[in-house]
Image 1 (cartoon, rainbow, N blue to C red):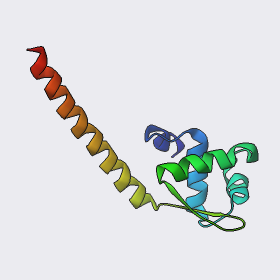
Image 2 (image 1 turned 180 degrees about the vertical axis):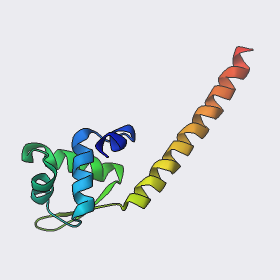
Image 3 (image 1 turned 180 degrees about the horizontal axis):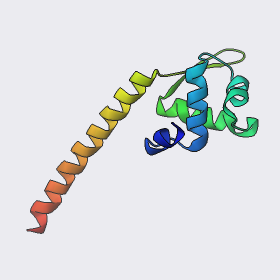
Image 4 (image 1 turned 90 degrees about the horizontal axis):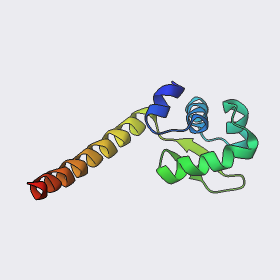
Length: 101
């Protein structure tokens, strides 16, 4: 599963953290580190990356709690992003193709 998530743009640590969150949602960063095997020194950087991409939601508080998008939501989001990227590439390549002729 980690390799599958890596093919979707996750780093190994991000994949481990996301999978740990799927198993036990709404937990602290400390708990994610403990259950994922991601070093505690890296977990908040990893979680911040996941939050900034929208793959994980953080509930402010003391301590903050992290909750992943469901697997279904994550896949739908990745499909949408890929379709948008392919549409942009298609349009840009078509423009370049016309100018090269």
